[in-house]
Structures are given as C-alpha cells and as structure tokens.
Amino acid sequence: MSVWLSGVGPAFWATVSTFAVIFLAELGDKSQLVCMTLAARHRRVPVLIGAVAAFVLLNGLAVVFGVGLAKWIPERILAIAVAILFAVFGVLALLAREADPDAAPAAWSRGGIVAATFSMIVLAEMGDKTQIAVAGLAATLAPVAVWLGATLALAATSALGVWVGSRLLQVMPLHRLHQLSGVLFLALAALALTRVF
Image 1 (cartoon, rainbow, N blue to C red):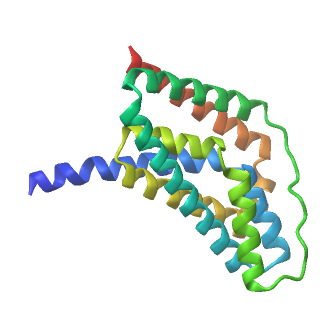
Image 2: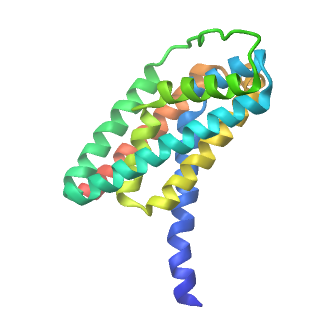
C-alpha cells in the first residue's frame, strides 16, 4: 500500500501545484476576457464548451512539447530557460495594461458559438505564457498530472470568466490580477533558478 501511495502522492501534488500556478497566472488574462465577452452576448454553456475544448488541445500540445524538451535538453539548461521565461512573463504581467477584447456577433447558433470560442482561445493562447508554463512544468513533473492540473485550472478560469468574471472585475481591478500573476511568475523564476544551483 505504501508503494501505491508513494506513486500517487507525487502525481497528486503535481496536479495540485500545476492547478494553482496556472489558475493564478490565467486570472484576468485575454482568454478569460474572451469568455466574459462572449458569455455576455451568447449562451454560457457553448462558450464554456468551446473554451474547455481549446484548452484540452493546447495543454496536450504543451505537455508533448515539454516532455520532448526534457529528453533533448540537459536539466540545468532547461531550468535556466524556464527561469528566464517565467521572469519575462512576470515582468510582462506586472507591466500589462487593461484591454477590451473584440466584440462578437450577437446571433450565432450553438455550434457557431462553440467553434468561435474554440478558435478565439486557440489563437489567443497558442504560445502564450500559460502554454509555455505548462510545457516547462511537464518537462520536470509527471506529464499527465501537469496536463490534468492545467486543464482543470483553465476550465475553472474559463467558467469564472463566463459566470462571475464581471463581478470579480468589479471587486478587484484587472491590473491587480495582472500584478498577482506577475509576482507568481517571478517567484517561479526564482524557484527554477534554485534547481540550477
């Protein structure tokens, strides 16, 4: 039984830590703003389905890329690269300004809403900080656990954007959410550097 628990423990904590990192990093980001905007004009469930489907695909690509990196690049060099990327994303998040996403047409079918949300999220997030963060985490943690944690986190932030995002923005300004993300990414950069030394 202790062997089984030792195998489950690291995967569980990889899922939980990935969820926490990605959830906080994605709060107030453009994909959440896309969900808020589309949900304000269309039915909420198709918007959420399109967003979650997009993140299933994007996180799968990020995990595959991250596992490939771990096999081809020495761990020390990878840790330095991840630290630099996290530091850059942290600074960019701290410097981010509020922006309004493009308005969406008002009368679409359910399938059209799902497809529009899916394509908007894929285009907005391809190569974005969260996808690269998932790739970096998958290079050092259990890939399936990272994928699961990231996908659950991004589904949760999408749901937050669809259902209560506008209320959250009334309570906490968007720039504060960006600042929280920035501080988190700088902390992750420092953590990644500890693996180098």
